[in-house]
Length: 99
Image 1: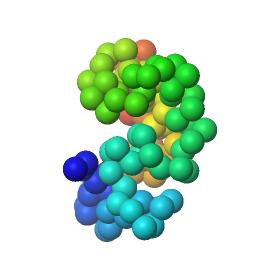
Image 2: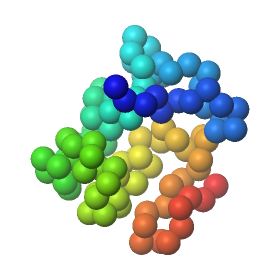
Image 3: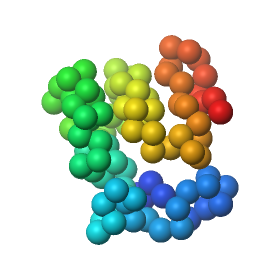
């Protein structure tokens, strides 16, 4: 079971429901956001082109230094966390995020 990406928290200014805003019939989880949500097919295609088969591994995406820059670009390109966290900088810029 994956963790929801939408905690019920006013601190992160996210939704009060775990439901995917693009697919209201299912919960938005890390797995859904990274591998399944049909809203991000184009962004996921770019990620898969960069990382090949490894782009389908949650473990690889979340733990590999090789995946980090690609994952940050994917997250930025979805715009999913921009309202809460702003633009997430890539690791080459040595900053975790900017508003």
